[in-house]
Image (cartoon, rainbow, N blue to C red; front, top):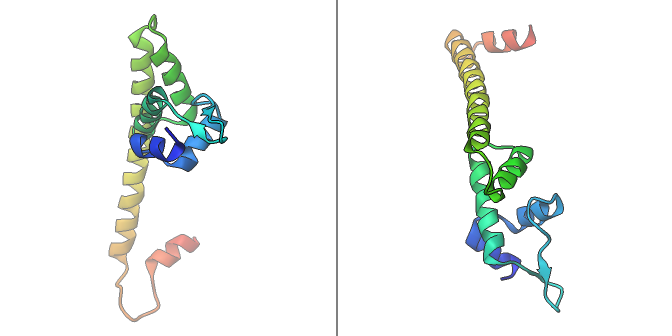
Length: 128
């Protein structure tokens, strides 16, 4: 199938498919006589795997490890679990940081009268 069909079937944009091919996350696609890329069902399956991993917050290098583990039938599932737990811990730290930023912004917003006067504790805080 051509890149458009692979994109439609996998949910990965054509631009990202080319990028994943360039960085080696997917093998270089076979080329037709016309020069167009030709993707297999296995390529689409791999693209879906990558998309699902991205949706769960895995960065490219960890996706590369996951792909290696996925293709290694002799692997220990403990390695996969460790990657998932590490990613979940990272996401938890990021969520905590975002919640702290949100709380700080809400406190600043509550301290601002939001009227026609120029005084604004939000700007004062940002300038300090």
